[in-house]
Image (cartoon, rainbow, N blue to C red; front, top):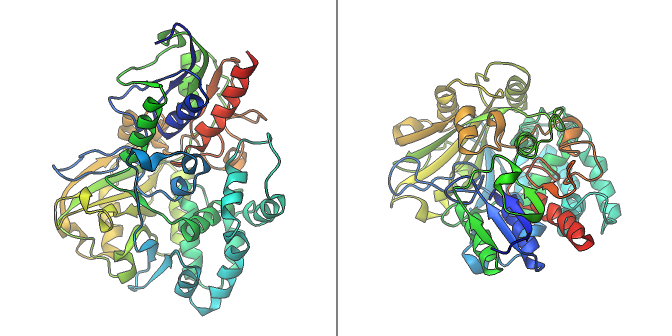
Length: 472
């Protein structure tokens, strides 16, 4: 290791790995330090239940990763990353045995909503479909440092996306479309009436139509392993089992980049209460299942989908989100996001068996057990589900925070996605990746454009870092 590195990155989640890669690509010397024994952060794969069943402890389906300008600009396929697309990106079953779907086809999606809302859905998404690559680059890129490539489309998207999703839902006359769209918003654990929640739902819908909602062959670890392999080829070094408690634990460098929570960064760097106003959001209770066969969904569409949303209607979803966000008890009928990777990837489980992943929202730091409530919900839409269970691994907020220190209180978004913090995080600042120390930067999903496995906070922070390095 050189006596003075150009950059040290702390935290080997997707954003820390991306920041390290982007700096190494530009010829800077980079070392990355990770507290756990393997790289990955929220993109890992482990045998959590039984031998041969490979589970993703956090992220599993990747609509934002496959659309990410950061990842699309890197040769990750060369290092083993392969995207697998289920027949349907997502299905949302209803109690009567039918389902609405989010398909690669806008027509199939619109038809699943019924004739009264098919036209409204087409009018909603069509203006953005053929401009998706430019649009996603504009709203996921470094704020205020460059003019938008397509300002007209970005402005049009803002007019639709900035109001609450409850406003957008008024475009639809029937509950099927409202329910599916409410579920899309709920992926970021935000109350449906929140600022810019329409944009959240619309982003997930457009991502499905343009790039899909794939899984990574072999599990989400493949994303992290590909980034780490590319970093090593570029000359960067990766150090695991290395916990950083203060800046003095790190080698001398011209810049330090933290893929950590703002709370952890303040503690390590001695920033006191600099991030004291940063808010963390609801937690999740997650179960990874080893199953003796596929999930016995009543709706045939759900059997073909990679992701399945569970919520009887938009009112039930809204109530579950309010309970997790504003109350101290978990919802009786939690909204569930579930992923069934082995529908499209047989390498994830022994022959004839399946892995299945489900979580529900709970209050921040909640210490209860949501297993029974989750399985009651699953039995509503997949009767006989419990009979398929060979083993389960449960993790509530305390366990999730222990596995990944960025998930403060079980908040897998590393910060509430509500109010102004939806767009302006971790502080109200024109320079969100900068900190009180000119050589210290933050690149976690606590920075724009926010949560998800897409690497864009790391990509954007790397731009800020290399601009500083070129000036010094």
